[in-house]
Length: 271
Image 1 (cartoon, helix red, strand yellow):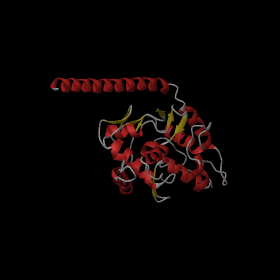
Image 2 (cartoon, one colour; image 1 turned 30 degrees about the vertical axis):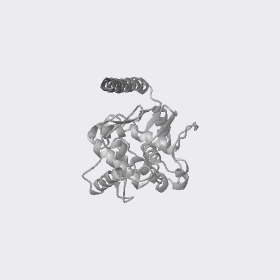
Image 3 (cartoon, rainbow, N blue to C red; image 1 turned 120 degrees about the vertical axis):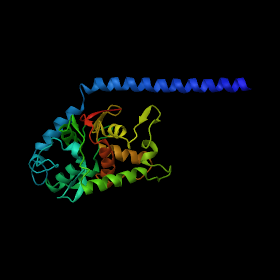
Image 4 (cartoon, rainbow, N blue to C red; image 1 turned 135 degrees about the vertical axis):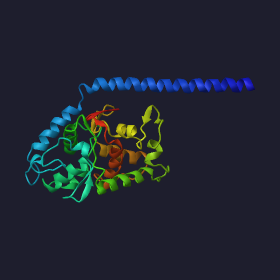
């Protein structure tokens, strides 16, 4: 009996080691494939569309975002805006991430209706074209390529959004009693072949925010951080938050604040 137990234990250890090695090999192969794809990243196509939309006179008011939208760097300027958000905008009296801010500019400056933008804010698997807002966010994000994350943590309102996001990440609820931290609150966790970043650490937070907006190869679609947050709520079996909500901004602030000082590589590639 003792020999059988020892043998089974040895098999279990060998299997675990084999599974771990297979996971590492699979991750290494995917990262190699990702690096090759990045050389001709499809995100560039969305950046081009976004630039056209940014400069076009649109909406009931027939104005361009380039002539009216301030993302924190001055009207029309996109350089560095993505890595310095979420940030507080006095004209809206709110801390906003870049996607939420662009939506605000589209409604307040161009005259679009929020309800129309929110009807279909994300690209679906069967959609040939990404929504305008996705193209715009991708273009703006490209203006921060190879810049360090620099969310203004010294601002009291931004710090409050960060702390609220931190508390939200730890909040357990829903039918599975899940929180964000259930999957993303410690090192070494994974689901199937997917390694899960620890968002409370600088390295893990960077993995959480890098590559968004991102071209998702499994669906052939371009998606944003707002979509990623909404999908996490769905996977936890929580009610999905309202599009461009303060709750999502708070979670993005928590991740971005933890990633401060590290390099943003621009719109990227996702599984």
